[in-house]
Length: 291
Image (cartoon, rainbow, N blue to C red):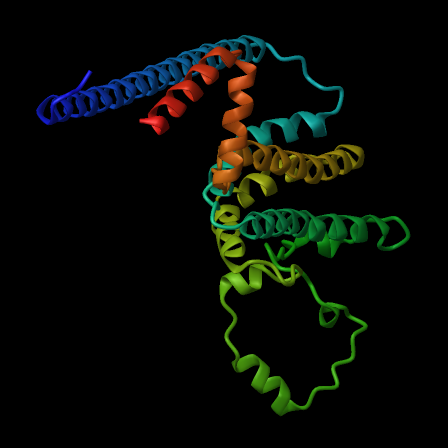
């Protein structure tokens, strides 16, 4: 059966039109499927947020209920410390979590705060210890009569020791005195090689809480209470900084690669049990390639 040239052209045009319509249909199916997946993903995210909000509310209510009549610790020092931590930890947490550019900033902040807390209490402990042992166990009246000068934030060096013999010339002493040291540099003594942004933030943060620490420690007179307060203050600062770092690590967006995202997408697909959809998608791709 012979086909005229006109009929052949019409048949080819019809076939070409059919192929174009099939391609459009395939693209439409894929687009609708992507939109459906996106909407389902958004729904899952919203549901997860609602669940987290509900859990957070339950935790807050439970904590509020449990704290209405807390049982005191057997040690007054621990009770005083607990009251202090309630005042200073929120301040430290807010300032610590601002430092998100580099982990070294947070490490520096942590080191400087702990160092400053030690330096705040150490001179008072030393003065009290010297007073108890002066004059064969009789407290030194000079220590009772005068205020003890406490250097906040700095670390005392060898030259502060009474036994230290200074061999510098007058010119060397004069030259060193002419070098101005900023408050942040003075605060950072005792911590070397640390990030300066973290140090500066720690200085600003510690100024807000140092009086709270001093006031709390000076409430205590019993030696055991003081020791427990000091030891557990340092320990709790370290533990809370660990906690803040863990919380922050979960919120910071980590770098990724296309390969990782593809592998993760493949695994998520397997976990949701949509093998049939994958096969259908491959069939559509093969059909579109043939056209």
